[in-house]
Image (tube, rainbow over all chains, first blue to last red; front, side, top):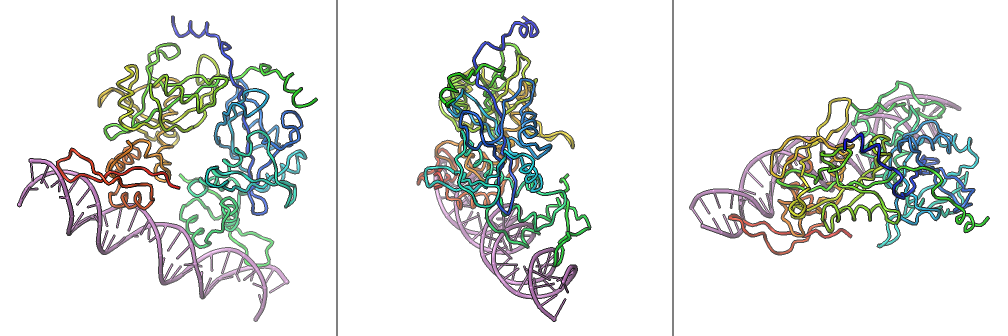
Length: 245
Length: 245
DNA sequence: GCAATAGTGTCTATCAGACAATATAGC
DNA sequence: GCTATATTGTCTGATAGACACTATTGC
């Protein structure tokens, strides 16, 4: 039997299979804190609880394409830095049926984060704070919500708190050896803004001269020649991210 | 409608969905080189080519459990360090039908690697060497096979060369900030063996005193008090990996 | 000149690479 | 004592943190 003959007789529906979904962690930094955009579920299961935007993967759609579609349709965002995070496959993670979910991390500059919030009234920002649950437990994302600062802690739907916790940990891990940090900034930015983003993600203050030295020595920053405006003090130099060769 | 009513009327088979598989990269270090265990495909598609051991994910099985099952059934290995690598979702990656595959990395000590090879005649080791395909292309795993050293380069089935390339890169990246390296060693080992494993994975020689210092300062090594035997020169101290607290 | 922040200089602690010296097993 | 490798000591260069200093803008 040739490969062509084999394929023509193959029955793709022979076995029952899990459903496959993509969930997005839409992360941004607002007011010096990392946050994620959540949707309030209107349907069962977990109706009324907050959840990550997500959807099923189409039969003719790559995982990346599914993530882009959800970004567009559910969050109203045209483009963002997207990267695959982890695939969650616990058997009972969704009460409807077996659903395996490929989680993606989407990074938004502050502007895009706020615009998504304004454009989609059903979106809510949640501030992410990761804490460690003692010896035995792993990291846990503690969340609070509200369109303004403050707001009550959230109980998230499904295993979405785990996904959020992993997202912030992954981002922390990659922040200083990769260029992901720039995805959280506008096209032009000052070194102070860059440092603010790093400090928000890492949750700690950084040494200013050392941070500047490191960033400038990497060769990823191109001076634009112009400076920020609107300050009543010395304006900072504006830089642009230049992809390393 | 309550959540219970909703669930009782929900039809899990309403949409067509991709199939979901797990593929394993069974990695070990042999003769100072990183290698992976491959299976020769006996059926279409890609009959006769080498491929990673894999299988479909059962409906009542987590992804981790599926990986363990494949490790047991296809490679005859009872236990190994297993970690999820990445999920591959290109639409045409398998000609039979749409199959999304969650790739796992399994790490084997040299002994287990060799035993798997002896116990399963259909397994073949492939030496992994990663090279960069010029400016535009990403990293590519160059492979050669053979039960002994030497052997011709391999053309792998499906997108398994990409998976292999990612596996070695991931391992390289994690090697010196995590404890994965120990999964490639027996329970007791010398510092030289530990360094050999690191050098094989990184593909370059390391500075001996610096390596020793770093490893000992981490506090992950517990001296067993005994020494290796069978040498005609000064025997090295044996250590045990002690999980950091 | 004052306030406030941008940007720089310098000292020190830490850590990795280089290289050489010393230790110890079997023979 | 000889061989081969284990193990340690020390020098040096690179880098991060600490801290203080200088620069520059609007007012």
